[in-house]
Length: 310
Image (cartoon, rainbow, N blue to C red; front, side):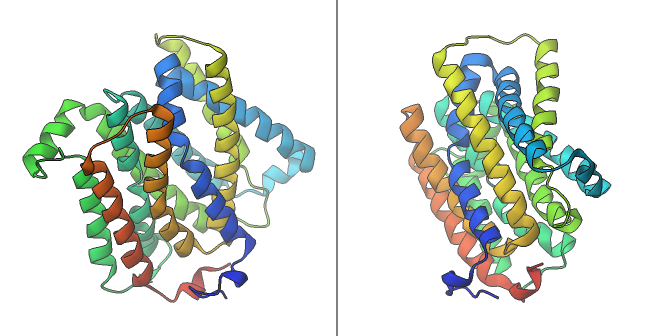
């Protein structure tokens, strides 16, 4: 069993989890850019359809259709439902942001799933943690609180004013955080390493459902070469990252990967600033620092880590 310093013994499924973290860092930037051109629903449907088609073709070339029957039904429908809710919530949160700076803020609100994954693991996976989990989680929460306040006034009044300025977007952001925290743990609880992974199907079905919803509403439809390139890029990133994350949650070091995922907010903010050509205020950067600090305490709070490897 790998310990916290013996990197050479970390299994490949844990490394897949690290790869997912790196890929996810580009999500907020691409979601915002695509949403600006096509709307969050239409853009989300197109991106997930593109990724889902590619992934499912690869899936059926490698595995017979009958092997899908080996997947537990609670994983198929339970995790599949959470996957759909998370995807819609994330696209609406970032897409409904008033501007690009707020889209970065909402991306960080979504990343509240990182401490929630560890907190939920206590109740879902019977993970044991010591007292350091409390200050670790509080630090991460304070990071989110800092992000949602003005740079010159970190207060509940500023927090409330910022929230009420765009409540729908923030509600979707928090919904995304909760659903992905649950998904990450339930994928571990319900997933069967011997059965074929169905994340590609989750991506495709999610794309189909979001596309149907998009046909029922009216959104701007600006489709250019840049739009097509971003959709294809996002689709590939989505498929690879979700498949890698699912493998890590089922057979990797769930607590180590979840703790390292605290660094996604920082990477995501940097990528978003470069790609969207915008610079957020000090509140966003200070929030990143608190979230990362909380990750370190949360990681050290978990005891008996060797019991989580399948």
